[in-house]
Each structure stands twice: as structure tokens, then as C-alpha cells.
Amino acid sequence: MASFSPIKKGVLTDTLINYYFDIYLKESLKACLIIASHSLKDFG
Image (cartoon, rainbow, N blue to C red; front, side):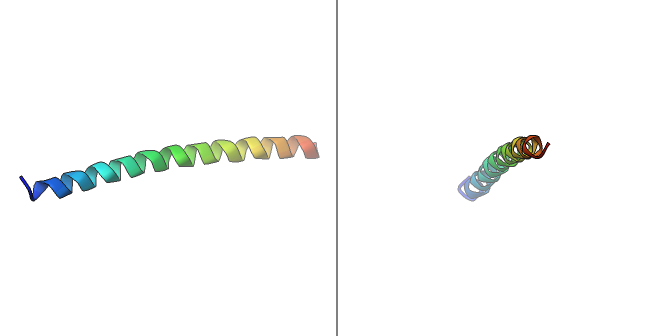
């Protein structure tokens, strides 16, 4: 049981990191698209 605990903790941490990284990437892409569309409007 004790030897399984760190593995479980690591998996949980990796899952959280992946989850937040996924959200971060999507939000960054959204922000880039918004900036790009505003830039195109300014040039157009």
C-alpha cells in the first residue's frame, strides 16, 4: 500500500498538469486568434 501511494500521487499530478496545460493551450490559441483578427481589422 505504501509503495503504491507515490505512484498514484504522480499519476494524479500528471493528470492535473495535462488538464491545466490543455486549458492553457486552448486559451492561448483563442487569445492569438482574437489578436490576429483585431490586427487584420486594423490593416483592412
